[in-house]
Length: 288
Image 1 (cartoon, rainbow, N blue to C red):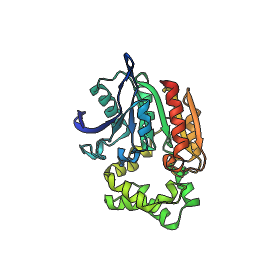
Image 2 (cartoon, rainbow, N blue to C red):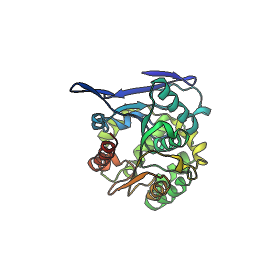
Image 3 (cartoon, rainbow, N blue to C red):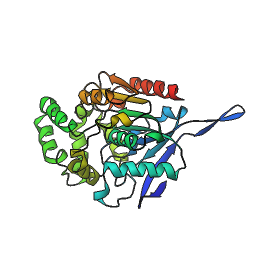
Image 4 (cartoon, helix red, strand yellow):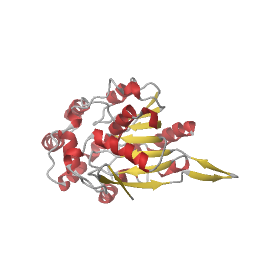
C-alpha cells in the first residue's frame, strides 16, 4: 500500500487488527509504526520476528523514502528530519490521533527525532540498539579497531564511514562481511542470504545518511521533550551502537525503562529473541 504524502509515495503495510471483537464490545488496540534501520534497509528485517506483537497492537510497517518499496524522490530529501515529517504525514493520512513507535538502529534515531518534534502524538516509544548523537560512530570505530578483522576495518573506512558505497551489491557484501559482528551467534549464511534476498536495499539512502546528517545529529539536549513511557533496549556486545550510547539515552529521557540484553550484539532479536520479545511484550502489556 502507498500513501501519497509530502510529494512522494511512502510504502506501508499493516499487520494485525486495530479493533478486535471482545464479547459485546470491540476492543481497540494501539497502533504502532515500525521504523527500519540502515538508512537504506527496509521493513522486511522485522519479519516475521514482530508477529507476536499483533496480539497487543496493530503494526504499521514503513519503508522510508528512497528505501525499500517507497518512491525515490531525490537523495537530498533522505534526511532524519524528512523521515520524521513523513511519519507524521502518514499518521495524519491514516487518521490516527496518537501512535506508538518502534525503531531499531537508524529507525531508533528517527523515532527519537519524532518523539522530540511531536511529543503529544506519541502514546509510547520502543527503542532498540540505537544512539542519540553522531559521536556514536567514533565509538563504533573504536570497537571495530578492537574487534574487527583487517578486511572489516578497511571496508568500513572505504565505504561505510564516508557514505561511499558504489552500488547495492557492495552494500550487500558489506553485510555479509560484517555478519559476525552484528550478531554473537554463529552466522547461518543460508538463512542470512534468504533474509537479504527479501530486502530491497538502497545504497543511495545509506550514503546520503552517512555523508549527511548522521555526521552532525545530536538529540541529547532535547531528549527530555520525549514525554511518553519509553522502553530502551541495548545489546551488551553491540559494536555499531555500543552500550555507552544506550546508557546515554536512558539518562536523558524522563520516563525511560532501560534493559540491557546480555550475550547479544546489534541484532538483539536474532541473538536473544525470547528475552527481547518478552521485554517488549511486558512493556506493551503495561501500556494497554
